[in-house]
Length: 201
Image: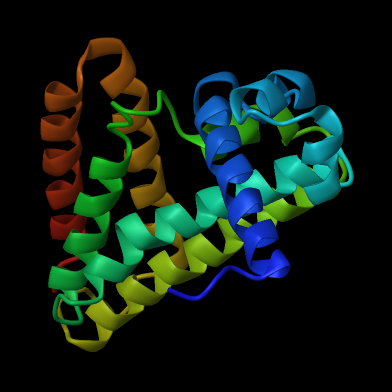
């Protein structure tokens, strides 16, 4: 087995730090990240963590990007196996509803970040907007494909329907934490089908 190069070891260590920081951010938000406790959690010194991230903000940006990658891997990529049109759109939303379970890590970094940075201009808000804009574009693209297959009305506004589907995911996440996931999922699924029906040819 070949030995890891110093750059390879550095990347692996950085991944470990980001992974642990992601877990903390899920429950405490990005503002809950502190270099000291994080360094202790990964068995490093503060200077060791700073060697991989020049600042707390750099670490927060890396965690936000990691959250985006995990979301894409959990929600979008598996859904691409479904046929274009409503099957793919339903698969995306089903995976999205599953994402909001968060039984292992305690919450969604993106929802926490929106509350933290929606009114705070700066790099973190800018990066959050980039991730959100890309996701809404992907969701609108899935809607557009369903319009193209004739399964949704030709005059359906993809961005508007994506906005409304996004609202369903938010309320499922909200209710899952307060009233239980199963009840929230059931209501979310029924709301989605009603929404799709309202745009059916």
